[in-house]
Structures are given as C-alpha cells and as structure tokens.
Length: 167
View (tube, rainbow, N blue to C red):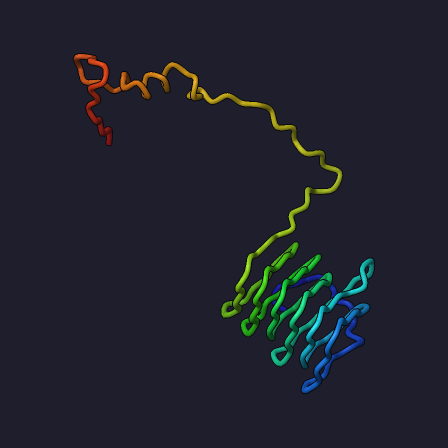
C-alpha cells in the first residue's frame, strides 16, 4: 500500500461494516475498522501493531498504533508511532503525529502535522557553540546605521541618508 515497505502485522480483529462500538478499544497486532468506533482505539504498547481504517470506517476518538493506514474518517488525534498512510479518501479532523508519512492526493487533514523526529542511534548531538555575527547589535557598523551615519551622501553629512540601489 502506497510505498510502505515495512511488513504489517497480521489483522486478527475487525469492526465490521454496519457495526458500531461505543467505548475504548484496545487491540494486539492488527485491527481493521470497516464500521464505526466512538471511543479511543489503542494498540497494546511493546508489540508491533497496525490499524487499518477502510473507506467505510469511522473513528471518533484518540488513535494510537505503530502503523496507521486511513482510507475512511477520523475525528480526533492520531499517533502513528512508526508510519502513517493516508489514502485519497482519508478525512482526518485532528492533529497527527507520525515518524513517516505517506499521503495520496485527495487526502484531507484538518489539524497539525507533527513529525516525530529522532536523532540517529549512537550519534551524539553536536554541541552548539555561541557565534557572534560580524554585524551584531553592538558592532560599530550597526550603531552607525542606526544613527544614520552609514550610506550618507558624498558629503558624509550624518543624518542625511540617500538611498542607494546596487543592481
């Protein structure tokens, strides 16, 4: 599906078409939603998980799983710990968090996209050293500019600035 290369866990559970579940849903491995869930849908942490919401599927609540593929409607925030796939018929009303995102043209998100960036493993972060710009606020050039002494006309009269355009 899309360009996702990672193997999806097997789907062992389903909310069938025409079925409506009220309340929190917790699942292991894979869950396919063809009906409606009004409540949070959460995969058991620590195991590889996939949530597939088909075109007829609808979830109103918080979603959390490793891999999330949406073709239907979601009202609420989505956390895809690994990957998020949005098919062309996907409609999401809420913020989405993901590590990788694949989105087909036509998919709609009414919320913020929040990529979860992580540093590469075993790579220490580079230290940030203070750096002073050659044109810091205390530099003579900036003071002269603020006092109207730079770019003065040929007579070098302070306060009389003649615009110069070098094209």
